[in-house]
Structures are given as C-alpha cells and as structure tokens.
Length: 161
Image (cartoon, rainbow, N blue to C red; front, side, top):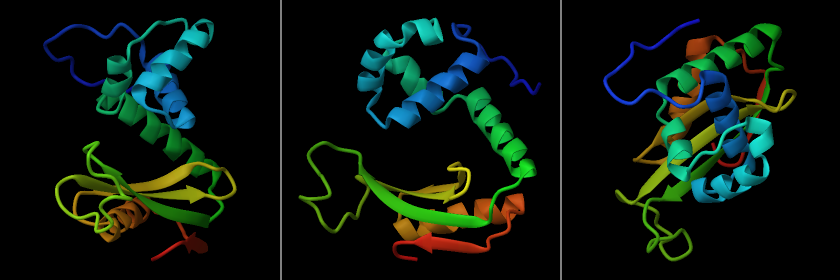
C-alpha cells in the first residue's frame, strides 16, 4: 500500500477505507457537505462513524483518498473500459450572489468549470478536468488525463465539444 509521508498535525480519526467510502457516498448523493452530514446520521451504522461536514469537505483534498481513487480506476481500467464514453461540462459559482441564471456570461474569478468523461458501460468516471478559465480548458484537461493513462476512445458523446 502506498502511504503519504505523515505531516505535522492531528492524526486522522477515520481509516483510509472508510474515508474513500465516505467520499464516494458524498459524490453519489450529489448534495452539499452539510446535507451529506445529515444523511450520514441515518447511515451511521453503515459507516460506523459520526462526522461533520468539515470532515467531508477535507476529503476532497486528502492525498491518500486521491491515490486510492486513482488506483481503483487503474484496476478497473485493467479489467477494461468499453471505449464508449460520454462527456459533459458544468460550471460552478463560488459565490451565492452570482448564479448561472443571474449571470449568463459566467466569466471571471467567481466561476469554476468542470468537465467529466464517463465510461458508458461501467458508469465510472474515466477522465476529469477542471479550470478557472473556461469549460473548453476543463475539457482539454480531461482529454489529457485519458491520453496519459493510455485509454483508447472508440466514440464519445458530448453536448458541445
């Protein structure tokens, strides 16, 4: 198992396996961290832990979680991806006052763009890119990720690019 060198600070309360499961659960629910915290109260017997929304938030920058998810994808890729993909981009406002509906230009430092590529057969994300400049830049980063991993694309369905 690959380990990250321990840094100064408080040790993690939750082991890596549970952190990865918690991260996947949070992404599957597609809710805010506070909403996931409330949902976890119902599923506490499943995870065996009680966590705050801040713990969930920290999972996004947890290097061990990132490595475990990457390794999970590599193992799945070795089993084979179909080569049939779909991609879609999304934008996120960083402020509550500016929303897509009220600011249709979606430019500036208040927005971030994400582009995800999913394997249609397995339903797994195989490429992800994000950018503060444009959806096109996020798309390019997602495609670069696929190229770097040697994933062969037979066809890809996208809404814009």
